Length: 149
Image 1 (cartoon, rainbow, N blue to C red):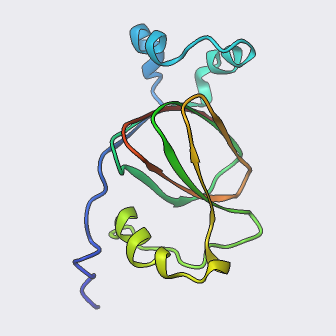
Image 2 (image 1 turned 90 degrees about the vertical axis):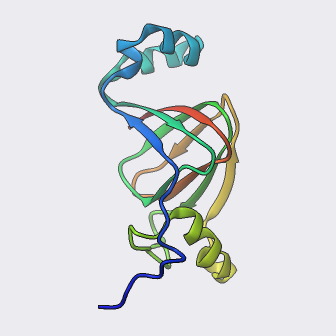
């Protein structure tokens, strides 16, 4: 078996995913990071499918898919790369390759027809990801978000 490319085998910065109701256990975090948002408040009060995210600059999530989800970014900016459910991403990278290395050494060299839909989410915006869409995120600085799957 070939040795993995050491120039690509770097660790991604830490990204915290909490499905353990962190915001319910620490009311001060909920008050600080979840401003009142009317009708959406009821959505986040149902905590069984909520995920709290806390990321540092360049922390990321590799390409993956799941059921549909809403992602509310409360602080920072987050880059999204998305492939519709009808499109299989052209390259699936092994887990030992960091997202940063994949973006720089592989994705940057793809033909434009193979590139993902690419956008940046700003604070206060909600990103809807339809069911089975492959997607990847990269924090463009510190980020705080909550998702509802």
